[in-house]
Every structure is written in C-alpha cells, then in structure tokens.
Length: 481
Image (cartoon, rainbow, N blue to C red; front, top):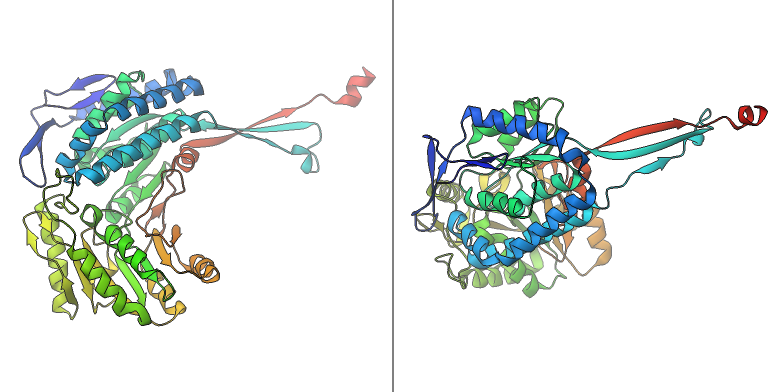
C-alpha cells in the first residue's frame, strides 16, 4: 500500500483506502491509503512552515540543481514511469513514453528558469517629484501552492505545476487525480532522491474533499488546477483572495481551407482527434472543412481512422486504448447515440467494448448537440462543411470555450487574419489544435480558464511583484554641508 507523503514521511496505514484499477484489464494496480483530516492539517501546516523556514530563502542555484537532478533521475527511468502511466491511465505505451520525455523537458526548463527570475529598475524620475529616488521591483514567491491535477497527463501536467512552483521558491501541496496516483507517488519519491528538503513537496492522496479543503485553507496562497469546468468554477468562487490558475474545458476547432495540404492535414488530425482516446484538453473535436475539399478530406479522414489499431495499451503498435473507466465510455457512447437520434450521421466507429470506445467520426451535426457544444473528452470528432472564411471563424467562436485551435492554409495573410479573429488562447497554423510545447504560454479565454502554463509563464503566476524604493541623498544639501 502507498499513501501520502508529508515532511518526507509516508502515511500508509489508513483504514480508508482506494484501489487503483488498470483501465484496460480492470485488474488492481495498487491500493492507496487516503489522507485523514489530521494528515491534511499536517501537510498544510508543514508546507506553510517549510516555506517560511526553508524555501523562501533557498538560493536560486539550489532550486535549479534540485530540478536538474530530478530530470536526470527521470531520464534514467523513462521505461518505468511510462509503464506506470500506461497501467494506471490506459494510455498507449508510445504516448506514455512521449509524456515522460516531455516531463523531463519541463523539469529542465524549470531548472533554467529558476536562475532567470529577475526584476527591473523603475525610472522614478519620470514622475514630476521623482528626482533623487530609485525604484526596484523584485519577484518574490507566493508561499504554498496547491497543485490539483487530472488523470490524462498524470506526470507532465503535474510537473507543469510543481516544477515552476519550486523554481519560483514556493512549497507545494500535491493532490493528484484519484485514478492516477501511482505516478504521483513515484514523482515525489524522485524529488526526494534528488535532494529536495522535506516538506517542499507534500503529497496528499484523496478525492475532491481534499481539493475543496485546500481551496478553503488560509495557509494556501495559490491554487493551480486542471480539470472540469464545473469544478473550476467552484474553485474560482471559493478561492477568495488566493491566486488561481485554472486550465478547464475545450472543444477545440480545426479549420481546413481549400488551399491546405489535405493529406498532411488528415494525417495530423487523425492523431489530434483520437490520441489517448480523445482524453486531451486540446483534442481536435470540431473540424470545419471548406466545401470544395470537404468530400476529399472526409474520405481520407475515414480511411486513415479505420487503419488505427485498437487494443492493449502495453503493446507498442497500439494506437487506441481504453478510456479511463467504463462510466466515461458509457457517457461518450450515449452522446453519440443522442446525436444520431437527432439527425447526426455516424460515419465510422462508435462501438463500445467495456472501457474501449472505437474512434467515431460524426457528420450532419448541429451546433447545439453535446458532441459540438460541450467538451466530449472522448474519441469523437465532428466534420462540418463551411463556405467562407467568415463562416469558419463564426462557427469556431460559437462556443463557451476558447483554449486552442488549428488552422490549415497556405495563405499567410489569411492565416494571420483568422488567427487574430479566433477567440482562443492559442492558434496553430498548419498544425493541429492538439499540439503543445512545454515552453509556450498555454491557457484559454472565455470559460476555458484563467492564467497561463508553460514554465516561464507559470513562474510569473507563482510570484508577486514587490516594489522597493530608495530616497537618495540630496546632492545640493550634501555639497553645502
């Protein structure tokens, strides 16, 4: 049994436990000891004390070294961590290996960023009475950061919160998703092996009640959350004066203009629509195709989707594995059935076998259908024709979400024009919405969230600007003396 880790000590003797099941085989992978109220209070108090007694005065080079050493240790154990992710999340092993590689990169970005957190000199003499004064701005850590993470990228998305928090000089209370706590446990152990002081990263195993308690705690200074819109909205309403970063829902549009490379676009969009069974925040969910190339695109898209291999995620040639659990697979299948009942056409896929839902392509959809209007978070994509550039932009913006989009065109003027008009936190040209690098600003507008990730930008959100002003000696008075 594995449990919470508080001040370097593991708590694994709780009578309140939870099983972690392999989404594909449904076999038990681990038993988790859930944190008690007392353990929660210990974690919060310890994180608060460790920040004030240890972390806020730790030199940047020490924080950088810890992050670099953790990256080096993770690089030695790529296969171990990838296998863990595949077994607890059901992610095909090739994608899990990619996630671990990205996680190493996040740690190295954070290691470098720790050494480059700088301030500025304010030109005080720009003001009428500012002569003889010097203004400095320093960026100081916030204190305790609560990292509440999802199941779909249990290592990489956790590090997008933890690594910048450490780089900035904060302590972290880490509450991983209930479905994927094993990789979280191993990650904290890795930090310990790299020499992180006890209490800098405290791990709390538990469900939503732990997250709610963190949001309400006066000793927590920031909440960084990735998850559903309803939970994010609740956090925003309850957080009070805490800083928050919320990475929430999306139904990402991808626009295919008639001058696009159709073969390349279909190759990318098969991957972008169905990778990890669509359980990706920026998964391609809506594909708008100009009418003159609609039939060509749809035909190729269907053919290439049929060629995907569905099966056991531990096998290296598997493209599509299970969804995270049967409840989610059932929910997604019901959304397909509801759409078909209301006039949509299922072109291919959509069959459910336990936790596995075969990739589904939908046409003849309406904008008010769940598969269009809400975040489907499943291997379901809709292909929709459009006439004009204006139509494509209007359709894409017709959503409560605005996280990331993809635009395929050879026309540079059009690309820049459409990118400016799309109500999104990010737009890729000739690339799928699903593509993300770990160093660019990542975050949505509208109800897709608040704040940005991407190591440099996350660090900015985990520090506070502090002004220090000096009144210098009056030279005239000094000369008279």
